[in-house]
Image (cartoon, rainbow, N blue to C red; front, side):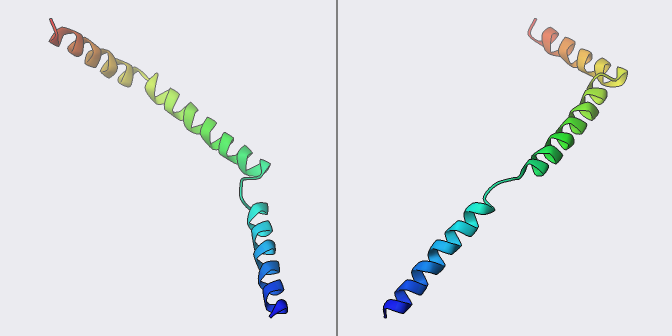
Length: 69
C-alpha cells in the first residue's frame, strides 16, 4: 500500500512539473506573434489610409454629423 501511495504521489508531482514546464510560450513564439501582429498592423494601416477608404470614412462622418442637425 505504501508503494502504491508513493507511486501515485510521484506521478502526481512529476505530472505537475511537466505541466509547469509547458505552461506558456517561449521567446521564439512571442517573437513570431509580434512579427505577425506587426504585419497585420501594417496591412490594416495601408488599407485604412488608402484613398478609397479615406473617402468612405469622411462621407460616413459627414453623414453622421449632418443627421443630428
